[in-house]
Length: 139
Length: 369
View 1 (cartoon, rainbow over the protein chains, first blue to last red):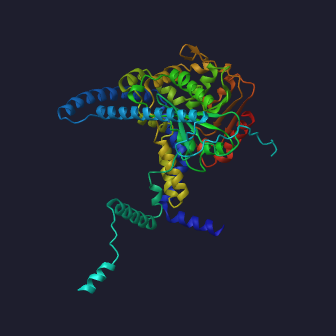
View 2: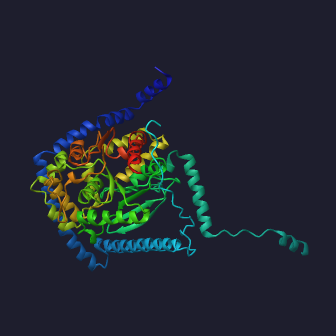
């Protein structure tokens, strides 16, 4: 046994938590498979479906009552925050479209030889040639 | 008195430090002191440099973004490559870090790489359908690439559900611009997705109620539905992290992966409804009954060179769910590569650079001229 191995074994001996963790990592797949077998059972599937329905029902009741409550307190609800997020997303989309359009216009102008810079970042839009061939099979 | 005044005049002016400069200096000193004294602390930086390969957005519509990665070599293959990401996963898994990036690897081998990445759907996107993704977004992205590159042909690569979208498009446009098609771990047979199939077939599972009430399927729910396929894997990964906490490279890679794994996307409601009813319950892709818009998707109509890459230990798309794909495709030039690894490590793991990437490069190179 090499010295390095010897050292590792000693470390393992004095660190039971590490040994346990290593055992857990090695046996994880077996435990996971056992759990997924249980979850694949018909009764589990039915139970999960029912739980989901109940959770959705509760979610609806709670969000409706909370929305009214928050509105009375003049506090934004989650839906209000999502509205803001949606509007920010729309602005981001619009900015991306403008950026794309500007790049296209710049490329068009450059191709017309108007002297406009090819790229905003000063990077010349030198396109690589599309002539590459695959290397020989035995290379 | 006069001498004293002269002395005062020769004194250098006291440097004025701006508040923001002072703040940044203090931050620097504190962070340097902590980094020197607590090993591994820099790895906890949340600003990990994911998606580092330079790119630009060339198209956007609904939840999609089309990136064009800037070429890294002077000579490239004629046919541009379009990667279609899964609509439930972030595209940066294929460009995780410098040296751990499929995109960077392909660019260095001389491929012109584009990618359709998906953004989190907003409430207005709840009505987006699979037809929008396939017939509108992929079709328009390909047109954009053809205009951008000046080439009539495109090679499509789809990852996971992105592979389903890419295969659907190619089947609907058999005489279209797709020159080659490669799919990674692409599910086609829902009988192979045992747990999902069991759950969605239970009468108590009401997808209509779920979509009608929530609009989009939240990312937490998507994440949970993936985690549940191997419930203790995340805990095991944390154990591995503890066992390797003094290995900086391991810690950094682990944090990048775990952040991506937790960063799943919400799914547009109508897409989820369709996937549950048509794909999971109906298994219509295999039965050749799947309709996109008014058109029937027959994978047998695909005649272009085809490559399927599957992972031996994939628990998300098990081989039983993907292996029928090769048989369903009508191409004469078709090939399947089964690589050791899981669903994600297949394309982005430390060994992908030896196992998969060179084989993919060779396949693309021979068909990209």
